[in-house]
Length: 303
Image (tube, rainbow, N blue to C red; front, top):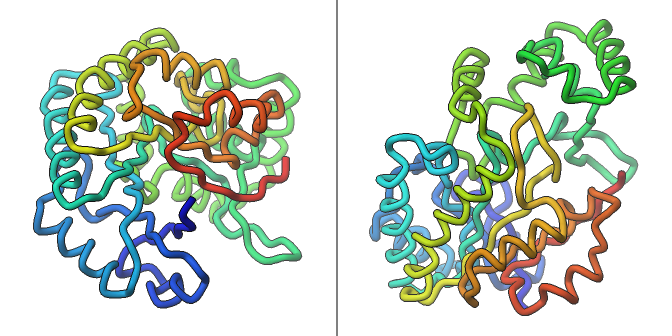
């Protein structure tokens, strides 16, 4: 077991010196400056690796190589993007970076409604379901959005929207749609609604099949390159914007591992994501999936 630290690169206000002083020996990072669908060059990888090692640390985990929407929705260019993804894997393998975390969430990456929610202990990330519904139903005005929420949530969302300032609406949209580290997008409202059409008609079965085909392409390359792939759970672990999600529960994780039985095909066991569903038995899941858990992010969650 190695203690690692998520670091967002040279612009991160937390320095590598700070990380080392905190007791970590490994770094979890990615080349966020390179957009999804573009291969990471050996030179860019070497530069980041040298930067980390100069601070006396190791590049332990990549989080993440973006999986583009073209791959997930299997649009015309999806195989080109898969080939690019495999090229990046090979380049990482050649320099000994051996664990790669990624996600398969349609359109949005990890999603929050607040990035600095005040608590007695300090600031925290927050996902408020009613606040999110207020944005989806009344700000974004996605077609048929109201039908995707329980009636009591819609009532609360309507009340929140009625009290919401224009500044808060803009802030909420920026937080949800503007892109987060590890994502391959930064959309305005019109572009986001247009992208939703790519997933028209795609349900859970179709997304699961898309993921299976992706695994068939990339796991053999990971095996050859000495890399362990670790899929991150959906965050939050339920549908957003009416889109399917397939890595949210113990049953999802089991089906995923069965889809490609290889030690190179494993899980990122994020207790924050899985733990935000009360029906996930975290201890039981760890016992069941232990041999295939490659990466274990730990964080506190209050529901």
